[in-house]
Length: 199
Image (cartoon, rainbow, N blue to C red):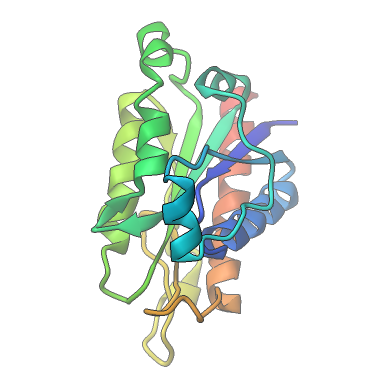
């Protein structure tokens, strides 16, 4: 059984909910899912004043633990069209893994949340995927086998580069069933791909 890490950062819970759906998909695809979050780096007063919510899962012990997994699905909210500083700070500590080639051949994928439909979902996904590609990982996107991302009959996330959700300007919109289904689909594809590569 492949072990897939769902690694995320979430300020208000949207990315955390998507992480749980990704993990459901990983299990559906025959893998073992482990959910961890990266450390909060915002000053406590800033986090409190902004209304940040505590993340529901355990914190990852450190970058070296990434090497224990067959696949890593990385999720971050969008900050000005890129991943959050918390997630970037974590990946900035992975130079040792890069030097050893510790993640080469492992499977990677990305997911995100934005306030608006055009708030930088695809650029945020690419800011995550760039790190995974530099690590030599095999990237899995949200392919169009998941046709829930098609159509314009409702507001919904989803991109060929990864699973996404739209939170609304005040954060009141929670991930829809279509968006959660996309996250589950992505998790399943990551688990299935990792199983093929480790066979």
